[in-house]
Length: 229
Image (cartoon, rainbow, N blue to C red; front, side, top):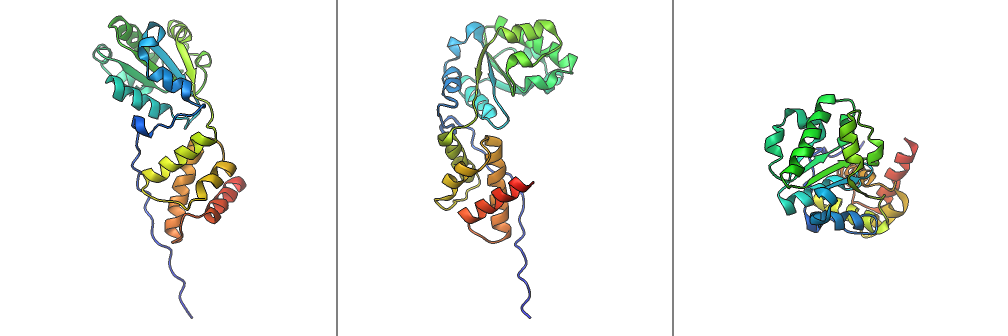
């Protein structure tokens, strides 16, 4: 009796994620946001809110802007542990602002950061998943300042953006799928960039475990399994 060949061990190693400007693909779904990020001198009062669903590319866009302006990036939930006056000495990006809706101290810190950054003549970029008028931050002076901020939204990806992101995700993992895999995924997978990241990670892991190439057949199988979950 021939023994069954064991599956190849796989390790969930982090992918090398590229977050540079050259890696950010521009399509109608994000063109306005990219144009705004590229021209902070045109932001009314020196501030901008970028919103969009999980995986829409907000963090990548923030890193592009930070590289262009020398801005520092901080999660809103980490503001209480930060020297706000020191942080306000240059442009700042604050990510995931709605996450502090129940954190009065973090809201107070963001309120002071908002005022100090602008008083120093620097730019302020804020991000969140939902539209800013839905952030409902209990600190009224903070929410009112956010409501008065220029806002741009990232849309769900169109075909060209989704295909480019899939190609980038595969490249981040230094793997090359068969030519028909990405067009198949664009037609059949959930239309979000977070779903794209999850699918590429699963394809990479399963292909390695089962010693398969990254084929359309494997992609179809994993999409079917996703639909069944």
